[in-house]
Every structure is written in structure tokens, then in C-alpha cells.
Length: 378
Image (cartoon, rainbow, N blue to C red; front, side, top):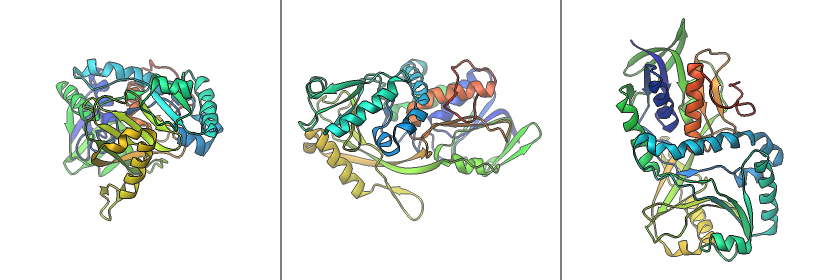
């Protein structure tokens, strides 16, 4: 049985960064990944770096939900600052650009909701500027004439998901700790002094375990009899053929689900939470209905997209909770068992989630309070 100080379950960006932080502190770490590193959400998401409260959820759940979620904005703000340092830390250009994000409105009713959302964001230190038609046109002339205004958050942006996981993987492997791919966890048992974790490649033992398994985190926790309200949601993303630089921002639409940005190679990446199809065997496929709906909204917001060919669509499992709030920290009923989960926008939150989780595991908190963010920490 391989013994370690800490076992990290999940080889997405949060698990990799958590293991990296622990290994840098001199901890003996074993990371177990059921498939390929970053193959679920981390390497297959649209690469958006979010900070604003998401407009569709603000509309769906209302201001009381937004105020409860508000403390998470400071966490995300700190995470975006860590994203800006990650290229230097890995020694690779990760394509991190914070060119700002715009929620585009086409009606006065949508503008009223954006203003209400901005007030909640401002109460938690996130600055979002309200733009009228002329101001929006000056900032983003590529938008449709239907756009009458919007909310501009200068700190949002993007990263290149195709570069992030390989770069982080290379960095953590240079530290020499045990990183096992295609090693699904089949059982976890509490024992004196820690936990034993079983896999098809043998058993592992550690005093502490970090569950960073994303969409599979609920199943991992259930092995210890724990119930977590988290699930996996199949989503899809599309990229167009490369075109000349046109969209320097992260674009959302108040008229429908949309996230839109342009990659450094000129391809426009189009998503926004549209569902992928689930096959009978559990694998995913792109849904043509979602594809057509997503493309229609994108072309409605940026008319030039209607003249560009879509090249490729792909799917991803994204983890989510009903209230959107992260679950980070040591489980009270399972000492030594930690959760590192930030639903829906986990890619954006990953550097901060990993930093806080590593500090909690080490018992050396240096970050700000997590009050109002996690039911497990503080």
C-alpha cells in the first residue's frame, strides 16, 4: 500500500493546482485521476474568466440570491489576480487576457436588471460600468444595432484551455510527486489516522484526502456516506474558423444564454451554458438544437458571426450546485477529508480554490475569511 501525506482526487485544474501548492510546501502528495488530466471541464470549457454575477441566474433567482452569492465575488476577484500570475509560475504563455466582459442589453427592461445586478456587485467590491448606446458603441463597435446598452466589467477575460492543463501538468511533474492517470477511485474508508483509498491500481493511504473531483465529487463523497448537493451537467462549446481580430471582450447577452470571445488564433469561441446530449452509455454528444440556438443568439449579438463558418463543437461535464456557492474546506463529520469545489465557474475560481484548500489542509490560513462563501470553512 502506497502511503502519502495527502491524496488529491481529481486531475482537473483545481486538483492539479492544489497538489502543486501542497508539494511546494514539502507535502508528500498522490494525485489520482480517473481519466486523462483536465479531460472533463478544465480542458474542455470555453476558457472564460468570470467575475460578474451571471445575468441569467440573476434573472432566474432574483436579488436575494445575488446578495447571498455576493461574497463569492471577492473570492473570484482574488482568483483572477492569481490567474494573471499563472503564466509566470508555469513558465508558459497561457493566453490570459483580461480585456473586460460586457452584458449586452436589447431592451430597457434588460437594462434595469443589469443596473440592479451592478448595485449588488458594487456592494462586494466589483466595479461594473453602465454603458448607454453611444458608450457601448464606442467600446464595442462590432455589436448589433439592436444593442441599446450594457454592463462592462473591466476585470473579466479569458485563458487558453488548450495550454493551461499541459502547462500546469508539466510544472507539477517537475516537482516529482505521484500523479496517476486512468486511476479511478473505487472506494474510500476512514481508518485510524486517516483514510485508505482503493483503485484498480492498488490501495493508497493518507492522513488527509482532498476531493477535487468536480462533477464526480458527489459520488466520491458518497463512498464515505456523505451527501453533497453537487451534480454534473453536460454542456457544449463551438469554435469558428479564424478571422481577423474583432472581439477583444468576453460577451454575454441579456436576451439569451451566450458567452463569446475570440481566441488569439482568430477563432470565435461560442458557449453560454447550452446543454449537450447524453448517449445511453453515458458519453456525450453535441445537441443540434442547442447548437442552432447558441449560434442564432451569437449572430444576433454580433452580426459578423453570421458570415463565419463554425468549425468544431465539443462537450464538457460541468459541476453545479443549486445555489452556485462553493463548498470548500474540511467536512465536519469526516476529519481530514476536504472538499475543493466551486460550481459552474470553477475554471475561473480554480487558482484561489486551490490556494485556500492547500492552506486549510496545511492548517496555515493566510487568505481572507471565507465567511459567507463556504459552509465548511471558517
